[in-house]
Amino acid sequence: MTRPVKPLAALGALVLMAAGCVAPGDVIDKWFGTGPVQKPAELVVFKPTANPKIVWQASVGTSQRHVFSPAISDGSVYAAAAAGQIVRLDAANGKILGRFDSKIPLSGGVGIDGGMSLVGSSKGEVIALDNAGKQVWKAQLTSEVLSAPQVAQGVVVVRTGDGRIFGLDATTGARKWLYQRALPALTVRTSVSVLLYRGGVFAGFPGGRLVALAIETGNLGWEATVALPKGATELERVADVSSLPVTDGRQVCAVAFQGRAACFDLVKGTPNWGRDVSSVAGLTNDRANLYISDDKSAILAFELTGGASLWKQDKLFGRYISAPVVTGNYIAVGDFQGYVHFVSREDGSFVARIATDGSAIVAPPQVLNDGILVQTVKGGVFAIAIL
Image (cartoon, rainbow, N blue to C red; front, side, top):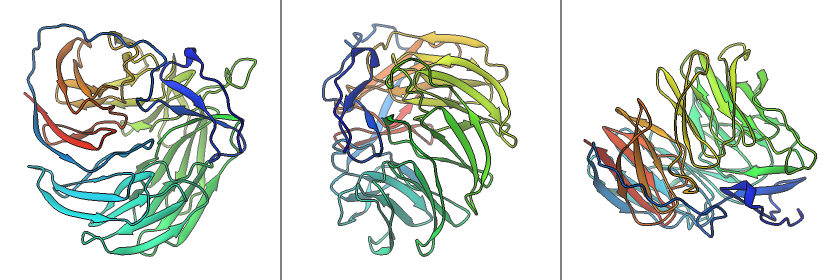
């Protein structure tokens, strides 16, 4: 068991709570709409210069205190809910193509491998289902699965809440490899998964570390420092990479809570540049720039080459925004009231806003056709185009 700790206003989009799932220390749990610590900014009044539209919407069921991100594959959208439901939707119109039950409460999903859906449970189970809802295989891991399993090159890569990464055979679910490392006394509880790219598994860890593993073997290719823990107390020394790394093909970039954003050579792991930024939600990139949602819900833009600061949009303070996503000429983020905000990639100015179902958008939006796809805490799935 971990020991309970008190909420701390300085954490902004985080609250502290006891949790027994991660040993040996306490866990900082990201806020899921149950009572913000920061007073959120009022919605800014502006003249829209773009026109967002909800193309279709569907409902899969509540995520409770977990984070579920929809997956897109071969013209279909897959979405899951905490009660165990998985829905397959037509990506063009939202028509239900299949609805089936995993028969276990879920805590992570959905990952896709061809026509196979991959989900995880709080008891450490990973289940693979075909498009008819039939179980293909089931694997038992060591701790709860808080994010969607990822698949590449015949390997299913799964993170568990005890700091481990598993490589499973995509056909049978048998374990191929395991990577693990010790956790600090206090960590950020998030739904962070892994980035699979060119035969590598890129993953951030508590303590400000970023690692590159070989997907076939799990062997460590390199380890880099995104941020170093600082401060006198355990809380002050939390410097976790708690969101997904991103890559532009030449370098891989990550950001740490109470730490820095940094980019490293993709092959060697040598540092290219770093800037002081604190984020739990995460980051994204286009060919030229890196965009970060920081822990005060500002959106920051940096040049990918050299890290020069370009602009900052800070009018969403305390609205607990999601990681950003690039769509056309815009950056999109969701917030704790279910709004999706669109800002210009050029200068960060507001260009549009659209409401969903009033509940928090915690998972990063996904790119879908000429727009984005979001899933809310209440289980709403919305395909949004912007013209």
